[in-house]
Image 1 (spheres, rainbow, N blue to C red):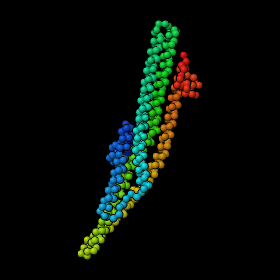
Image 2: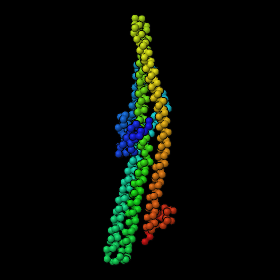
Image 3: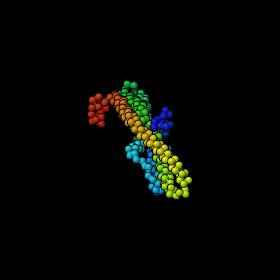
Image 4: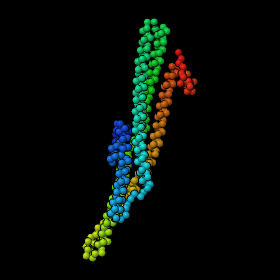
Length: 321
């Protein structure tokens, strides 16, 4: 199970949300919407379990030989864990998408606030000059000071908006491994389905062989049906060959599944460690840049550098005239 050069696993759509422009649609598709198997992970796994149970029940009900069931408990536990992980990651992907959307709205709103502050500053400055008391009157000086403070706030808000947009892009890139892993899950489900089909085929061949053996045992008691016995013996030999072939096919799929699950888990562990580290680093870098902007404008507006040592002065600020 590998990602192709076209984007997702085995041709899955490229992009952060596997080709969906809306992360909500992507998570619904992965977690319980329109999956290739028809009904999401839970429904897919339930269908696999029911098909295996149906095959066993059919064999037991007809009294035909042994039941070939899934005896690899390590695989079944790993399969269940991977499917549960997929569901949780689909939810995490949805929440991450909403988080980025919220930050984007915050950045847009902050930018709009900054532009409005700049307009308001211009209005304050024009009003101060038009009061008729002279450019150096107390009223004009106060008006320009108010306008200057508002302009500084507006410029800071615009800078924060730009920093936020830049951080959103970096955060989206850092979360790509999660979306790529989710994009590989259709291939994982297909691999599990292949194994189930191989097991069902093996069970069918075993049932057919047991049926022929039982018929042969009955016919051998009747010497008048030696021709039929001869024919049935040849069919039994062919059935044994098909059983052996089906068993080899099943064992091959079984071995391949084991290798793929181990490789997938190792790859996921490495990429997810890098992903969360990149996410945290981006948050730290963004927070420090935003802190620098607001601290600078606060000091320009009258705050002292000593204030940042405690929260008491931050919540009860003093404004320097």
